[in-house]
Length: 628
Image (cartoon, rainbow, N blue to C red; front, side, top):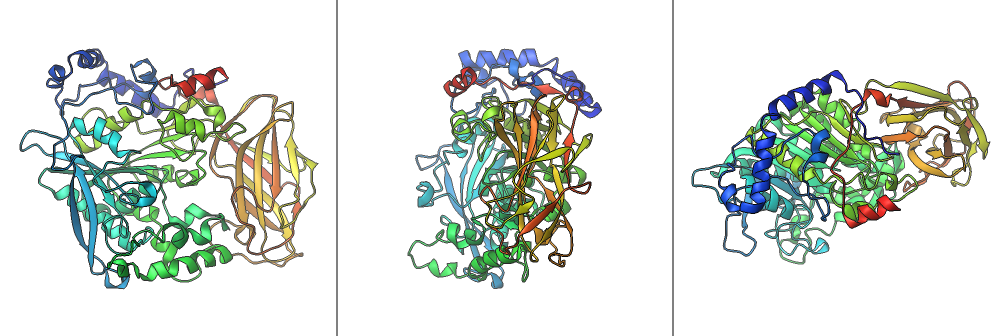
């Protein structure tokens, strides 16, 4: 079932692997000796492993990591290398210090303007006097908020911060936790990724880079909301040169992009602002007046109007909260982009084709895209609990668990914050829905073969009718012939389909499934489109209902799948599905078969790829899944 053998690699990957092995071949044996000895001699050997020595540890390319002595039975990944430094003691039990960073808020932001204050806690390594260190920071709204049970920002977050303090800080790194505006002890209002928040994040990065104990190199890392703030800080680019790298994990490149797809809205979209984050910063004290901000008041109406119209029709609320364009224009650092291909919260279109946009902009970037949900890559219990069979990640467990992730982070930070070691591979590690891992130079890959399947010809109508009612009760079902060979899909499939409508509006939801000879089907991917945006993009289209035929150019959410030989592809249309709302413009949609109604799939030859096996998970959950 899971492909683990090595195929041939592309020229760039082949060259990279040759150079990597040339650099490391002479040092790995010595490094392993230090690693094993450290387990026995502990502090005696730690004194030998200098934080600036680029030969320490077992640094091998990803396709050789399965042979390394990773801890693979625990609750999360552990770096192979043990650093020589302890955390610097402070006057509290968590060994942290707290400060407020001042920054200027534009008067038009209201609230606390112009006197912005950002709450920030720092942990430092106990290094010799005069030694400066880089800083890894997590910026988000969840520190010192009762809803997530962090009693104070000075306590390291159990989800990520404690692991960085335990494993990365000892190698000579400081760590910081930062509360965005309007949360924790930071003042102003909860701006939901708007200008005030962006300026506060930038101020925190500058403060961390300018401290006398800092070497001026800052990294940002985090998941979900905390994976969106790195993109915000990266927008400021060359205004300062402190931010050297970002590690967004299921983060947002834009707020509207999180909740709208081809003009169609998720159920949470109209109420996201005040409904989810509106209570942050409101704690009944005398500073609550600072939460009176223009965007806080506009937020709910903007969400509802976007549902009605599918895009921004007035003002710049969503434009202000789109980050990627400014990152591509201004950012001079690197990006390690991590995304779950089955993330229900932050869909993978945040990372794909963002990855290729980074590469094309000349930004040094790496991707790690596994078949997990809204999670970190190295948590077997969470990855198991949130993965289901039936095409919802379950088929890729336990191979999805990456116990080499913390080591990967250490090597990434060493290179981009300290200039230690060989450059990490500039590629994408992508996992298929059946669990196999491989490398790609771009994602979606460019060297693909497009398979176009005509509706009514290559795919036969096997159920339903060609009429899609707005109540999601009906729609056509097409099925292909059994595949003569296994089909390998990558990237973003397209469905271009001719339709006519009873009114200017309507919506289509497409479900793509893999069906075995017993007619048991699993989810492969899905797409949705408000037909007012049938040409793609953000421009509303118009047509004559009942008279005009329009071609809806739908794009599926990014996917990576193996469809076995003998299986069939099934395509179903309805008016809505998943967690999307019904269309705000109700219309009956009539679908037309023919040469301009096609399902377009990007396929590749696995023999032209390098496949690899990560360290094998031996956690109890993984062993149970492997024997089930």
